Length: 150
Image (cartoon, rainbow, N blue to C red; front, side, top):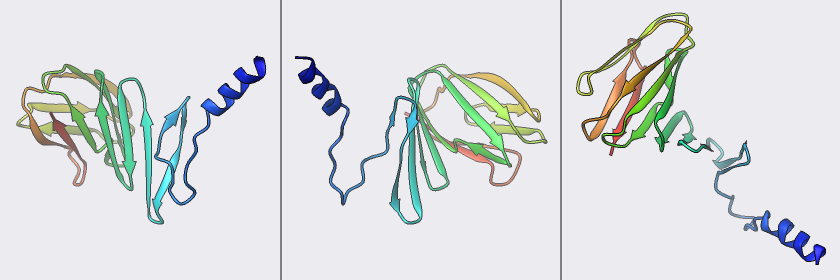
């Protein structure tokens, strides 16, 4: 009887896949698995209870399923550089600036004007009240994040 239960446990954790087709990227028990799609493109996905973050090449997309978004400013770039939010859901942004200079994140349509002092973390409350595709722009050229509100 114990032998049969052991076989179910072992087989239940295995995934059979075709050798010619890589398995999709997934996160299981705290381990992120990366699958190479082409010689120059890597896809990595990290899943938590509140969000799914996918990186393809240099583009990182986060889909929020909770109410906290962590934005990191480092080397004059924002990570993630694309997020999807639900209309009218209250969001808390954790703004972490790892650079030695201050940054300002702005968008007139969304009424965002957030100051990020150097080497600090701060939080900002946000409630998307417009649907559409927007950009959160930084004070450095090329520092921007796309925000899709659905």
